[in-house]
Image 1 (cartoon, rainbow, N blue to C red):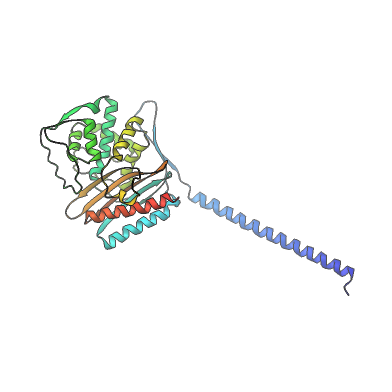
Image 2: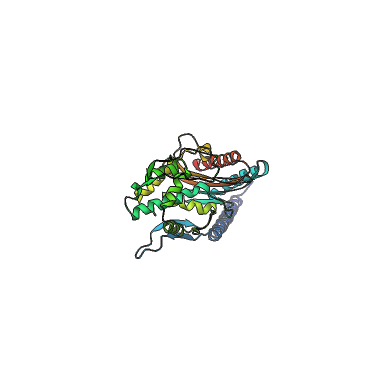
Length: 333
């Protein structure tokens, strides 16, 4: 028979053991949470990024902001970066691609692949020309309505793999009409006429303002990294360099670009896109590039892809596959 005192003792033991166990459990949980918090603080401290604020210089009283960037790549885009890198390596191993670089900016975050490689921009250079011409119109209202005669044939040395419409000898065009041919159809002849009427110092100031090496007026070639080129697309869409009206006009022209053999292959039909492509290279090594803002409802992302390889069709397929991967990743977040 168990006595009342022994029952009381047993209850006291149970309560005591339970109390000790609870204190031990609470202490363990507290210690674990404290360590997790300390690790999080250390992790966040080690990944702290400064901001780069890009301003327009040369004005007397104000310094307009072009953009604000974190100096660090986004961890949220690390998975997408790995997928892009894997695609590029596959094409290098099996499809004769020499190299490729990608800059991606989505939801105010960015990542980059092969950022130090330099490329001949080809017709991508037409976007800085577009911005320069529009800036000249702001400085001299009515410049877009200036009429330019095309009376003397212009010989363009480039071999074009993606031909489109071109201006006709013996006709006259306004600057605004030439801009349409240059951007929508990537017409090299229209571009030459525009460059002949373009102020070199205005173009050079543009490069200086966005923070890209200023081109030498006497140089026959100018090379871009994928990040450098993306600055010009951002300059248009942030509407901080040109007036809002001219920024909107430039973006509208880019939305009419008739090139379908690159980024558009990787996105659903009828997706809104503003873009420009460029081709360069020689018989030994081809180059194909494209930069675009792809719109997703009320948001969008900027992607610039630059490639080198033996075959234009292969480079086109590479750009399309990268575009498809990026679209699927960004649209699912």
